[in-house]
Length: 180
Image (cartoon, rainbow, N blue to C red; front, side, top):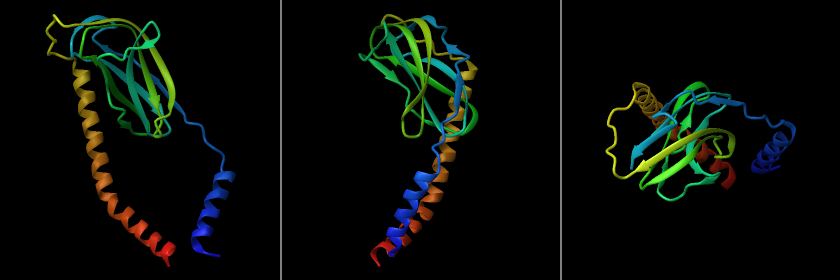
């Protein structure tokens, strides 16, 4: 039996025998900045703190809605940055490049494959207006969560760069078996 065929068969058997494990995630949204009823300047973010527990890496995103519909025009939303397994906190945000009114912020938890797993809806009365000047001050907890995300991203980058040689060697060895 050829080694690649054996490996493929082994993977298929493992996929059939091992039961799929459900993702365990729970999260809450304890703080926002500003409050859920506020008027913001164009380009000013509305921040939401996420406190989560998960058995695997998660991603979170905030999205603004009005009357149950996603507000596409002018909306900018946070990137879905990976959050570590276990207990943690994350920061999500939404802002607008033009005047907007929203009545709901949805915070969505995604798995590593970008599949939505859970949603929390926050009823809101938020307005972005172009005749306001953005408040430069933000609460300390927002800055702390931004610093923590930068630290996590830095560690992930170091790990990725450190492991790339190992991955390259693995695929090099594998290609030697497949080609030989």
